[in-house]
Figure 1: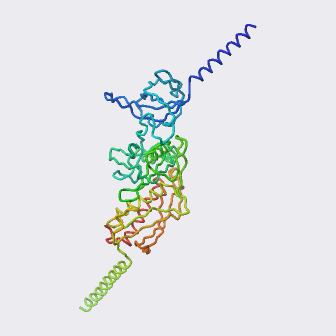
Figure 2: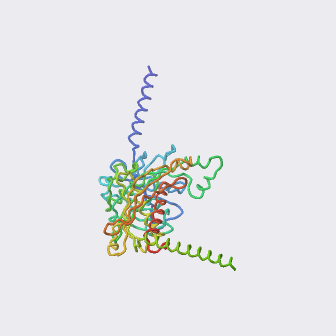
Figure 3: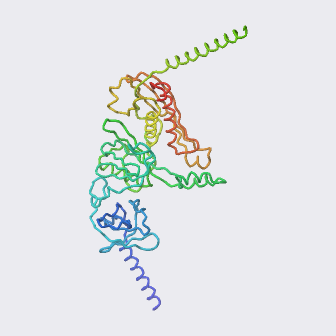
Length: 268
Length: 173
């Protein structure tokens, strides 16, 4: 008799604990990431302002990468499990542990969730995306790597070899697509192709998916220009969305999901 | 003495033939050429052919780059450029994609024989009034090394060569 009562009690406690845990932890979505800016900053530590949307609220938290990596810059659109506290946001780190992130600010996300309204609580439009100018950017050599941002009505490309900007209002078409490239690139990639017993060909099987962003715009004389960028997978659609929000036009509408960059868009 | 006279006559005949041949060739080449000071490149069209946007833009930009580099024209204008309206010796280049085989960079790198990307573009050089000066089908390919877009670079190089040989005022400049 007592054994049965004890068993029922244990089951009830476990069920209550589980339901309580479900109520505390929620699914949040990273909506924007930008470098943390402070006047007296110690530049040896890279820190980022990460905007996480939980329910109807957008929390801006301060994130310090453990190894100083900048991969969080490409995390926009990613879902994660979070626990909202008074001053901190506890998030699963994906390795079985948790990480405490101090909350810098919070705002309701009634209009922030709609792209193009321009009411994001944090400067999400200035998120730089690592990209490569494949061809067409004025003043920059082809196949130059740099950082791409959409800010103040312009598409900015900054690299060590030169900077360039295009007015969003002059953009006539923005098209995204998917592609892939060899995981080992550059000089190491070229040398690896010479590997013995077909090892170079075998290494070509390992590839990373990338997005391509194709832009057509007119200059002050009315001349038509085309630019092609490549960037990490899932980022081109965000750039396209921001460009359209700042006056660019497109022949193919923006896709609804922010983290799906869609298949190859084909023009007739 | 007799032999010297014969040899001199034969040498003279050969010289005459050689010089007249060269002159006739140069005349013929000059007749085929319709010199133009500038070229305006219109955006590539792909009527009836499914062409990804990046290929369309890459064809256009590579074509402009190659014409500027080795087309031999004094100026290369872009599609819609208002400055091209008053240029007297202007050639307009209209291009449309006829055949496009996407290929695969991965297949090329792994097999080295399969996955070639090829693109055939019909190029029409006209005067501003629309009179056709020259028409060619030009093919761009990438068989072994390079990304798929390298086919557009190959096409642009060939198109610039055709323009230089047939339409540019000073060849090789």
